[in-house]
Image 1 (cartoon, helix red, strand yellow):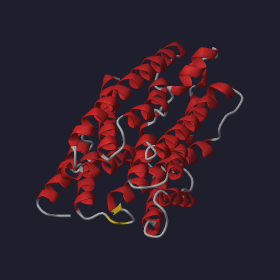
Image 2 (image 1 turned 90 degrees about the horizontal axis):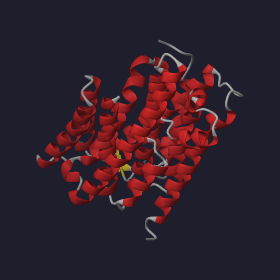
Image 3 (image 1 turned 30 degrees about the vertical axis):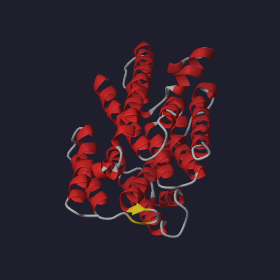
Image 4 (image 1 turned 180 degrees about the vertical axis):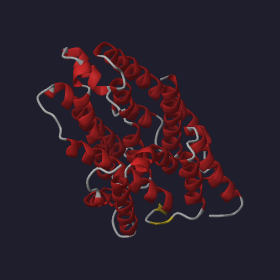
Length: 107
Length: 209
């Protein structure tokens, strides 16, 4: 169990902090108004984090290059998303492309 | 509405499956979904844990992503109401999707109905689907063979694309941030590069169409 204890700690810290964020509105009810600038910074910050996550997740593995099969699959999924394909197709397209490349011997 | 539940369900199944197939115990993604209940933060935290990052980086990234829920909860505070019970329960149901549904309604009564129906419906379907995915994930075995490691970044692409399409400032900040994160990856512990990507926000600028 010692292997999952840090993961559980991360989950609980994330859960508690997120709930505090969510309570902000109901508890401060009507007493604060966020400026448009702060709202924009918060939503842009989320996008910046997600793009950095997908870039590092697509290209790197254990601090090195992840090989070509994975980024190729992500690119295929991204192309489907760009064409506004349904979500399930994006996920399946990405996984299938990577799986097919690996079967063909691409790392 | 039903369509969004369905789309959320697919994300939920893939979240459960990816987490368990990556080596986490079945209960972890399930407990996480019930308690954290925020798709992108859950994917990010699990992605960092699976990549070998520390629990601190995983929690910090998820929390930074969820700061926006504070802004959302302010936006729907009226709709949630003032009752003690409704406040404590309603707060937990605040997500990107419920807020979008709620604010799309024309009058207060319908906003209230939309918040509670979409909130409870999405909570139920999300957690059910994560459980199904987690159970399926344990039967998968070697995930590399199915290309599941490409699924998580692809999910993120689908999530951010709408925000990137319309706003050049956000696009500039995100690309600069991602470049910084990639450049730092070989040199710093896993999870840290993503946090450093926030420096990209310096390039955000004012609102542009």
